[in-house]
Amino acid sequence: MHLSRPFYNYPLIQSYYTGHRQKLEHLSRGKWDSDCLMIDGMVSQLGEQVEKLWQRDEGGTGKYPPVSLHALLDLYLLESIEESDKHAITIYLLLDIMHSFPNKTETSIDSFSTAFAVPWGLVKLIQGFWLLDHNDYE
Image (cartoon, rainbow, N blue to C red; front, side, top):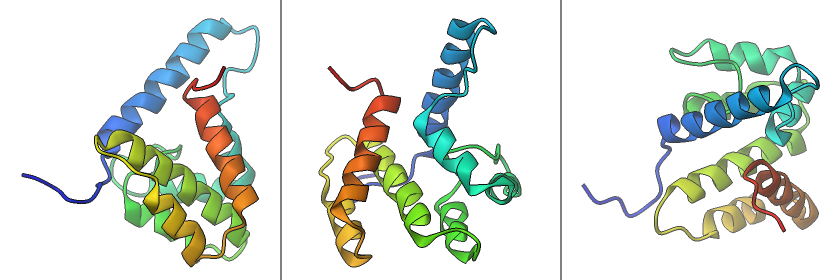
């Protein structure tokens, strides 16, 4: 089956983050807090309501990534969370989706930020967080 657009490959993205968290936990050996992925910090600042939201769906862990795009979009129904924070999580997930798709371009991120008037500085910040979480730096 050939898809012309990227699709949400939850198992692949979930596997990456589970492995990365396990690696950090192993490296810390209890000497420092191994919960240091940028995305985990972003999600934890949103509060327990997001964790509960992402646990309710079958297979949901309460941590990033959400089990489905529907679970991600449920963030937008939470009134107590700033819209810019919701956009930041969405941009981060778009980066993961584009990274997991073989013939990727960044047009989805550009289109999203334009459509929702997300400041370019926020987009660049989230891209920086994503690059740090993926060890893509010099």
